[in-house]
Amino acid sequence: MAKQRVRGYVSGVVQGVGFRYSTAKAARELGLAGYVRNLFDSRVEFEAEGEADAVARLVEWAHEGPPSATVESVETSEVTPRGGDEFEVRA
Image (cartoon, rainbow, N blue to C red; front, side):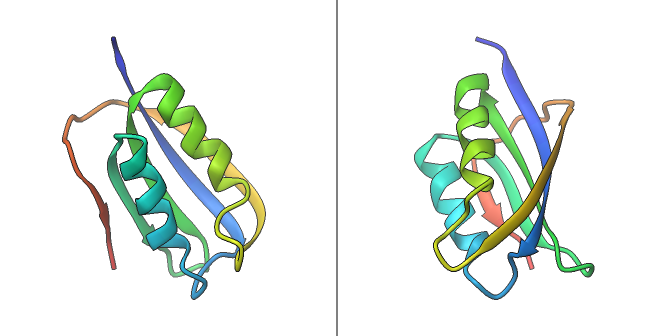
């Protein structure tokens, strides 16, 4: 099956609440590659690559995030797959 890669930007109360680590856990459980990181403008950015249904499930999860987060919006766009087999938390 073809791989899909999506870049997402999550806004709201999403820094300092475990959002990155929860995202990485969810992505790894779904078998996705990519990364998640905090941005200087208080958003969280992620890229996730894998089977389209697994990517869609992570994007759906991002609309809620962990219980301590308050997600206001999630913006996503499809980007070119790059391969890889790990999902990392970046500083």
